[in-house]
Image 1: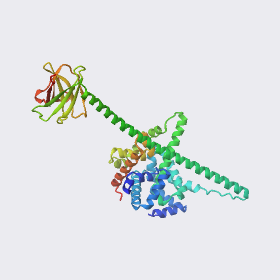
Image 2: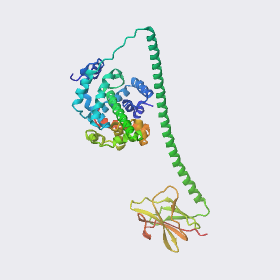
Image 3: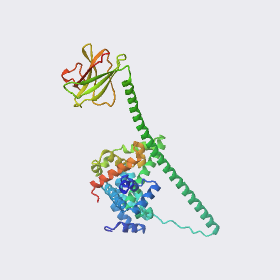
Image 4: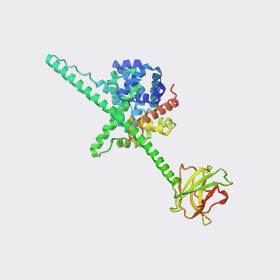
Length: 261
Length: 180
């Protein structure tokens, strides 16, 4: 990691606010000794913090200053008790040594514990992110498998709808299962519409258009439409958003008839 | 003591020169009180904490190492930690009284729901110019007194993201406060 990247992690800000573990802090301090760039950055951060704090300054009540100063005057220096006898001295030394050792150990283990729990926290966060990514990918895969099984199924007829004079380049397909009445739409090419309008799919049943649902551009894979029975052809028109009960034939984009069997 | 340098000031403080603490109080008490008052809404308690902070600065000045950062940064952290500790001990006491098992974070949240009148002074003006996600992080850390980790846990933001957002916010504040 170069210096710029190191700075951009925000580690210096965390250092200034005393939010680092002792190990991280020592690491920052040794880097500061080596890198003038880092020291300059630290200076700017500290000045920003001070300016920010001064900006939010609030004057405390008048009484605080005098109370503080009189409390300071009242403070007495701690008395030093002389230690004379040799055995007491030794016992004192031993107890001090034990106290130092145990407090060092408890501090040491506490820090170890803190670091471990932080590492664990990071790992848990990472694994949650991975699980989330995985489920998104999995969902997409499920959809693709489902789409493929429809496209490959003998029960579904494919009706290719070709562009009309309105949109010569447009093309879309309907996969229709005449037994279960399921209808799926696949867009190959259709132009984007304005916010106010939407495409509407129609099934031609006994010469009359029947609404098979509205759709927007590119759903990414197959789009389930309304079930239809007895269709002889399918067509798509452009209608106001939400669709209409009857089609505006002048806007027809694509049309295709059931292949003869 | 008219404008003395920071290193002189630190030397005098370490030599237990009381006039240096007075100088410190006169120049920085309002900035520190601003920090404390945003975390502790009760003025009386905030003033107590401010006094404790200066006593602590006086007692602990020998631990301050100029190599590791500026004096103000050190004082700011003393103030911030003291204020946060105070809200926690107060909440623990309240919990005992009501024998209600409130989670720690929801206690902090309750604290933030009190009116934000003092924020109108100076800070909102600069914070409102920041993108929402950045000003949010600054407000939670600085004004409500969350630690990075609490913020990450409570709002389900990765810790690294908290750090980088704070970083971006500080860059923006640097521009707005014209720090060079």
